[in-house]
Length: 290
Length: 279
Image 1 (cartoon, rainbow over the protein chains, first blue to last red):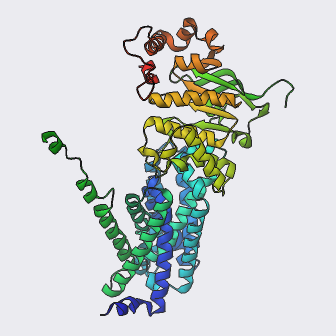
Image 2 (cartoon, rainbow over the protein chains, first blue to last red):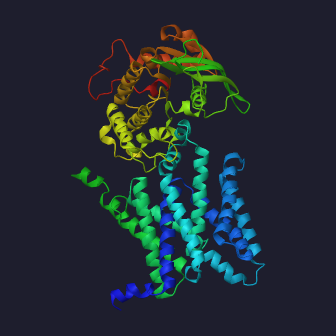
Image 3 (cartoon, helix red, strand yellow):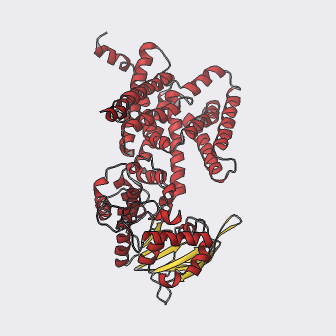
């Protein structure tokens, strides 16, 4: 097949065009916000949140309401509960998060098992169905991704300060609690935006994998955000093309593409890559014998 | 504003409890503009708690803190700059030195504010003043402890506050940093800032501070260093062993007939790290 035909193949259908735009928006938004998630060691919380959206999405499914709205409400409730437990809970952070997310996920499963098309609906929620989603749903999910991106850019400096040195942020009179709440809100929205593209199980991959890759490649937060967003974008395109030509699940393909980019960066990054480290390892024995 | 002269920071009858534990008991302290006040006490004596109370980071059971006669609210707190202790910061954070310093001005810029060109210029000037202007594009974690300490003092300078709170600025830093920080303290005094500094270092307290406060949950002594730094008061503050170690550390710093000159110019260690005083 000639390259042009290869590239244009998926684009000739309106369905795949929409999917490409949607996947790009979502992976860029998740990639950008993911840098702060990774740096703050919140991978577990983001994974937990992705389980927590399930009951809201199912409830929306059952009542024919907007999926994003349902997911957002249930993620925000969970995020708020986690933040509260982290602050006040005597349990410690990890178990409190685990209790919240398993409970909510179990509730979601119980809800969805009451529907007639149990397996189909479950698959779609857990693993996404970007090619089988209505234009309206795609629009909603794209809008959510845009909000995440805009919010992260608008709050960039306060978010950096609160992540790096929360005591200084508070001492300077910044509303740290509200900034934290906004951050968790953005995280919840990012998770919701990824539902259609890759499903709730894999959205953590979009948040964490490109950001971790960017961490190997760049040194400043802002640069890492740009790199992470770009990786997310490239991964979503590679993933969707692979999914189109090899007929595999799009969500899995996108996250696999991101993981592939990560593996390449891990090996070949200029400074922190495994190869670069091996090459620049101090040759102690040689200098001693010389 | 009250009628009496109240320029500077006033802490009145401050009491702080952590659960059942009494961290500060009825502490009073004044730090006027153009004054460097040293806060001395053993670990857990409430030095950091006092700074945190001034910054509004801890709940006071009792007491009143005023700046230039007015009670501290969130806006007034933006005029107080502060350097953190080492363990409060995420050193692996992908942030450059100049970004750390410019973030000292975020409180002035507000929630959605971004650093203006003038903010970057102020940040660079502060870094130059501390002799680390050429490190401005380095990642904060790549610097030595002394350089990191200077970055945070530069951040406090960039914030351009009327009051500076420095938490152990000389602990674990190199000789060059000590010299620069001490110079900075006198410079800040000259500019009419009120500087409150916690330290273990008796030499710093004796040489630089206009006023010393010996603290061990309550204020044990407060006044000019010559009057306050008496063996008796130190004994009461630090206990027997602690006071002896402190005084020994001081003797080691300035020996009458040392074999090698300790105040050598250039890069050689001019003073021992203040950590040795508490060893």
